[in-house]
Each structure stands twice: as structure tokens, then as C-alpha cells.
Image 1 (spheres, rainbow, N blue to C red):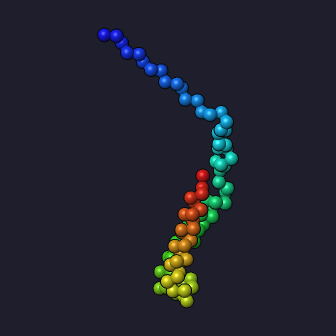
Image 2: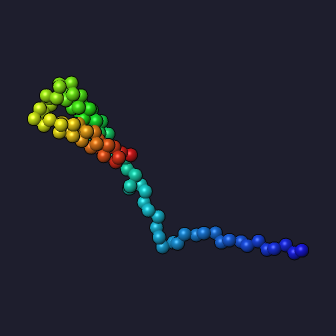
Image 3: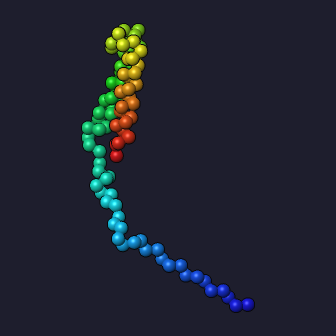
Length: 87
């Protein structure tokens, strides 16, 4: 029985009119202030919540009542937003 011929596939060559994306400009390192401010926001948020609960809900701002929780957790969420931009 005769042997069947093997097809040779062409090697893929990308089109020459499309230039590759420049990665050096997009992968710059983060500025120094970004992780420092994110850690500061985490510490401030946790400290705000701890002070709020340990002072029997009188400090930091008594008139805000449960909005103090929003401030504490808001600081921590803002730090997560900053850390999502960290490289």
C-alpha cells in the first residue's frame, strides 16, 4: 500500500504592518508614596475602629455614631484601591 503524503504547514508570520505594543512605558515601578500611603490608611482605619469600640462609642466623633464604622472601613477600602495600582 502506498504511503500517504505528509502535509507541511506554513510557519505563522505576523503581519509586518502592526508594531508590537511598547511594554516599557506601561510597566513602570510604583512611586514610593503609594505603598506608604496605603499602609498608613490601613493603620488609620484600624486605629479608628479600635478607638471607637474601646471608648464605648464616644470617640473619635461621638455625634457620628455608626458613621465612625464607615470612616474606619472606608480608610481600609481606600487603601485596597491604592494597593491595586501597586507594581
